[in-house]
View 1 (cartoon, rainbow, N blue to C red):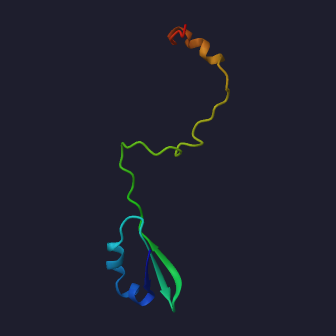
View 2 (tube, rainbow, N blue to C red):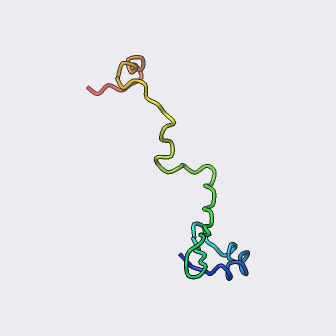
View 3 (cartoon, rainbow, N blue to C red):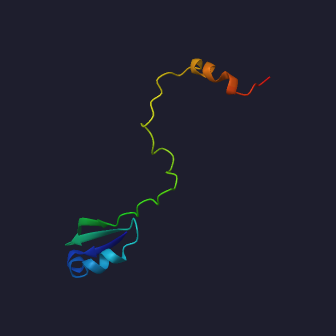
Length: 81
């Protein structure tokens, strides 16, 4: 994480913003005290890629946790004996 003074940030804001890499942070200080943080955004995910595990949490609700519903699909299931 880089640190820059408020005066430097005001003078070079446009250049500073364009030079940030995705996810990089710059702390802006005034009188040697942090007063703000500039954080570049991460690029949006590319379409068609599978999201990382855990992002679908809460989208599915299991109402019953039993095997009774499997009786309807017995003819399609492989026999294990």
